[in-house]
Amino acid sequence: MLIDIILNNARMKAIKFMNTNQIFDDLFVLELANNHWGNLERGLKIINDYGKIVRFNNIRAAIKLQFRDVDNFIHKDFRDRTDVRYIKKTLATKMSQENYAAMVEAIRKNSCIPMASTFDEASVDLCVKLDLPIIKIASADLNDWILIEKIASTRKPVIASTGGSSLKDMDDLVHFFEKRNIPFAINHCVSLYPSEDNELELNQIDFLKDRYPGHTIGFSTHEYHNWEYSVMIAYAKGARTFERHIDIDQGGIPVSQYCSLPHQIDTWFKAYYKAKEMSGAPGTAKRNPPLREIEYLDGTIRGVYAKYDLPKGHRIKDTDLYLAIPLLKGQLSCRELMAGEVLLKEIKKDKPIFIEEIDSPYAYNETLRSYVYERGINPTPPQNDEENSKKRLKRRKKHSKY
Image (cartoon, rainbow, N blue to C red):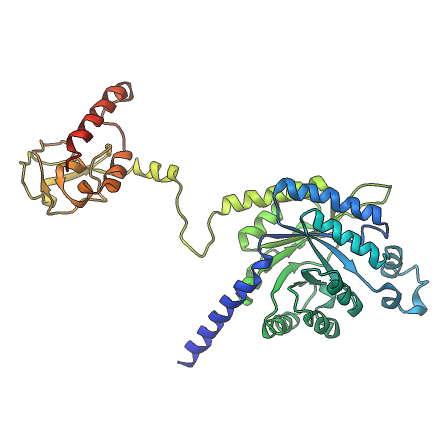
């Protein structure tokens, strides 16, 4: 009894979070990061170039910035340490709040969602000031609880990447946001820049979906050999939000291997659509087969034929009939056959039994009768199709009184 209550509560919790986490579904996050290099004009060009790719592909996308309160983020005694790449790049890409505001406005004008990774508490305040709908927690900050508490205080939806994290880190973080009923998505991520194909660990998507039901699971990737395979595999495994770094090749600034160019993101989007097409309906419900598939299968089922001469008014028994291909248009099939129906006319041996020749609900229901007449093959070869059409039309008119 107790285990049933626990399982039911878990299911209800999963349903509740599934509804609140829909904001993340089919969301592509384009990580601009610091590739503006502190230059507003460059940042705006990246946004506008990728905005066109997003609109052309009809993708739901966010363009993500990285916010740091640079003057306080780097200790004053270490600001001249150019041998430390993180310090050097953070200083080189510093941008004013006014320029960030201009970039956020450009993101919105390009019909994308503005979001940001925040690396300190002042940057969380900037997210609130600029009214960003989603905040990202970087892999390195999964147990920075001062920062996490600050992010949670905004009540904004959050995406976290799992690169390099422990299982306890993830369990604690998921529990933290669940307890506060804050929408929370979890990205599988390998924090290697760039990542090789054999380092992607895509089976982790299965693990995350199983361990954290009801949460959107995503895939944040840094591989650089191909822009199709991983997103197709990730989608098929159930990832529903996707992230890549973006850049442009301009001004002689080198493009990092793990960053994508506009034509590569276009390929990425198209691969997603192909994966979605090939995956079909959600795995939570039975798919609806297309008409072409139904028509093909209808051509393989057996039709009902008379084993003997059967008189009008005869009540059909199983022993009176046999099944064989082909199934003809208007003919009863193995699917409709039921013993006990009464024949409305005489049927000769080895002749097909048509729907209007028996006293059956199928004969009086126009929808069912139309379905039976639309499937199967014509009784005569194609060269006589015109003559057969006339005969069928005449026969339908004759029996419409039924």
